[in-house]
Length: 269
Image (cartoon, rainbow, N blue to C red; front, side):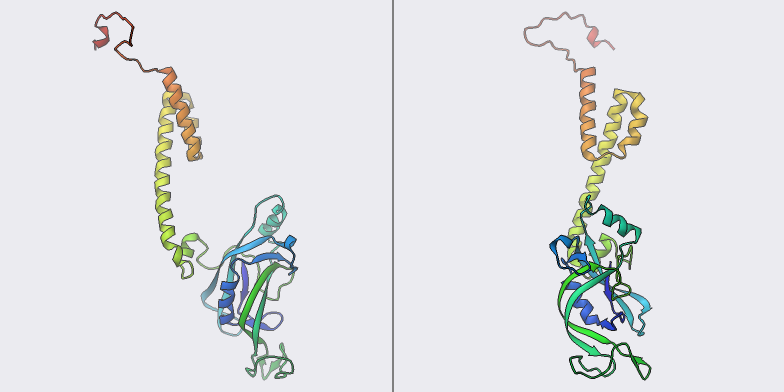
């Protein structure tokens, strides 16, 4: 989701690139609630990573390179959240807003820091054709992010995709996620071994199934593609047991205290 960007918002404030960078770190681990109401019962999701995205050639309304702070959040997929998840997927619950604290707001007209009885320029008005707004610096804290009806940031909200690193591989290849790249490569190698083992196991199950009953082979070959390793292992064990019962191992030598007749036919080809 888009948490905030460097556009002038509805309150005629604008996050500086410095502020976006600070918020990117501070928002990791922050909770998602509704309408900025700080209640434990309101907690519904949590951000596990963030990134700042810039699209080549895309500018904001001020002609500056457009930058957006994107957050990745998770929530429990359970009965309590089922309705919210449906509304998010349908695009009904979409808009979000951030709660944070900044120590410095700078007037875009004169460059003075805004404070009570300050420069006198009014945000939202134009002075000699230039819009007055307050640029935000020196972020002190990030409190939470909320689902709201009308956010101050026009672009803030849940999005399906933004930028080119919406995959795990893209994340670990980025500057922010680079420290996880070695772990990702190790997991990739383990995954390859796991897939090879599963394919070998599937082929063995099909072979044993064909020996047990050729009639079930076609149905088995279709369903085996959707079985997990544990299911295949259980099926392999069942087929082996069935074959052992149907074709018990016989030896040419008698057991202890047993006498058998021998006419040589056992060795005839």
